[in-house]
Length: 236
Length: 85
Image (cartoon, rainbow over all chains, first blue to last red; front, side, top):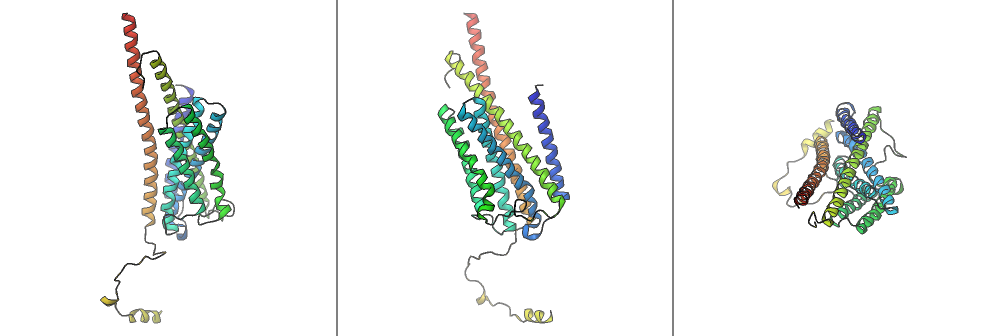
């Protein structure tokens, strides 16, 4: 078996084991928080915040892939940028769906136009636009370059999202970031850190899977082009 | 405590005429949503989204396999026709 496949399988097993442990720990060991923080619903936090780290990982990978593609356009760089954007969308969607369900209990409303919520939604919409562009606008050189430029733009907004709580205040709590009061129990920290590790590994796993898929797609498209030029295959 | 009990019991039962005859929007209404329901919903949605992502990847792979199959068939046909010729 090639080394890459062994590494991929190891990553898969490690991620699955960590997720099982996280589910056990969050539900059975980590204590409930105070009612003002959502009580039992506060446990959503252990997947909501790690989902944000997954989105950041996808966005950073998209950024470096996009910059690399703009410097020199190769299939692998395009595939990495594309995979990063897709992963940023899925983890952004996780964050945007889990957050409102927790907010309903903690704040009494599903959504409020708080700076962090608004900038997060904007980021997810930008990454969704990149994925839509790559899916429906074709896979030509111009489309790839445009998507890469869009990817850089989408990733640049991420630090604004991260620091928006400090910059503009708002409803969104700052518990573990600068100025926050922290988590009141060591088991809460443990649950959060292990969940962040699990979600980060999952995001890397997804980036790897999608990059390989995009590379296979590119290689097949090239092979089809060559076959069509040689008259073996009809033009797609 | 006793005074409050007295006050509560002293409230007259609302007559039909005093009851609501229209619905008015209230800001910051009483929170009744169950935390457990919200927690289960959040986890359910999370796993559904992750599975959807994996499913979409699997479907894309199926489409690539189908295109690869067509290419292999075309290559096999071209090879056999050139060997006959």
